[in-house]
Image 1: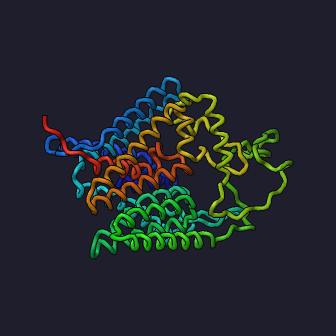
Image 2: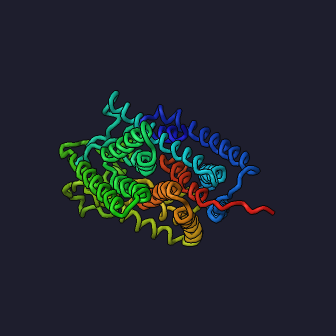
Image 3: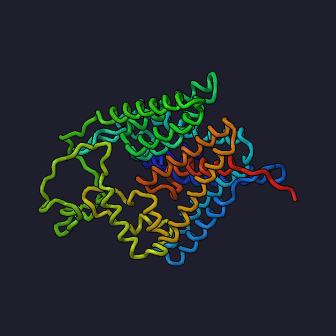
Length: 433
């Protein structure tokens, strides 16, 4: 329910956001309390403990973010966003602690993550049936019409759908009967929604991530090769279908951050600040480019500018949660309030120190996943490969979206829960004193 409400909180409808926005923080708080209670109930009876490095590094990230409030350009924003992000890390850590050494319990957590994404996808299909205009983002002269479903834009829901695709594959290959059909139906629903959204990063990350549980479950190299070939073929079909829609050369509408009335001396009306760098000389016409699968959407310019800005405060940054406050879009080919890269965004907020600790946290989760793969039996390896694939999908999406530390993003909670489950799957037996 928390996953569903977070998605609704970034909906295209102001009325829905007005209700779902505040409610998502309440649900996240309740989830955190339940996770802590669940972990507390396992302290005495638990015979295993998760890998502790990730917990220590997660605490270090929270500590550095808290201290950054001392020099933050927006101290109030820093505190607010730190509390939200810390709630997600505590929730994920508590769940991992509670299910350490208990594979069946970890599997139920994964099913909950998948169910949340499926509910969001079904809600989007319902909107498409009832009100197609709201479920679609209209075509412009440079981009085709794109499916957005319940989300505010096509990329927000696509991120959420790509994250649990490995879980859907895991259900389809490890369950029998109705569960197997449910897993296949979930996989088709999520993959189809991503293709319709035209989100390139989510499309590639989701399909490649789905290969991990399939290979881990393969009993021979031949079966693994067939699984890889099938995944590659499915990805090729998805890419081809996503390229079919064309931009509308006759579109007259455009999106602009400037909605205030123009005045005769308002330069923003003749040359927007976000079009300053890279604008054709004299404002000349530039032929529209088809949105290709490998296009950068102007992100390269935004990344370069954000790195230059971060270099002015290279050690400790501008304060946690201030990314959207300090980054200014001045690039003709880019549209966005943040540089759309989680690692560059972290550099802006917490500088080199924060990025170093944050990357160390992510690396510790990857190491925990490797330990789980090595030490587990076959079913345990498939489960670890599934959680590891979700983490890798999340890390790949972080290259193109500023979200890993944004509690209000659709995919953030799901990624961190699955990532910390790796520490539970790599749990070691408790030693008696």
